[in-house]
Image 1 (spheres, rainbow, N blue to C red):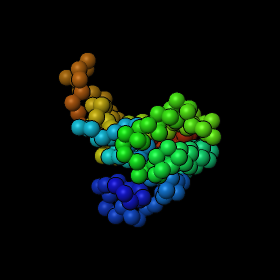
Image 2: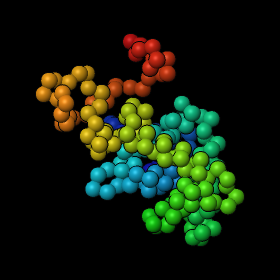
Image 3: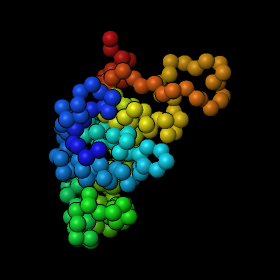
Image 4: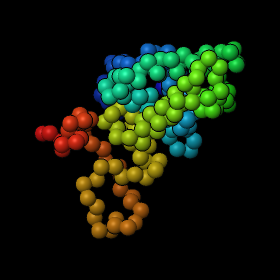
Length: 189
């Protein structure tokens, strides 16, 4: 998915109708590439298929805009470190080279960027939230993350046959994002 558009793959709108709202296009490509290495696609969907980058963009625009400067610095540092180490942009590196750059960040071994480890932790946490979180917040597209871990989603009770057993129900998502007040005080109607 090389476009920089938001929107569910199953949405009636074309994916080009909604754009990233917090991340710049180049930053979104770096975040997408890094997330794809943090939660890679294997025989199951990864961060790319789950749309983790879209969750991160929504999070930075709506819930945590104060983290946008950290992402801007972190994406620039990822790219700069890749260029110093491999003479290419982060998104142009092989998966193995990207893993090496991310390992440097995780271990805090990035000259000139003392916050590397903190940025990696933030990016990893947001990637996992984007893969496994409620889809109404921009990620977990097609409930891909929930399917990977066999989480049935927001079921409204379980029939007796499912008590103390592995649940084989299709995942169900909420019908939309809620404000912090709605979450704390119950959903408004």
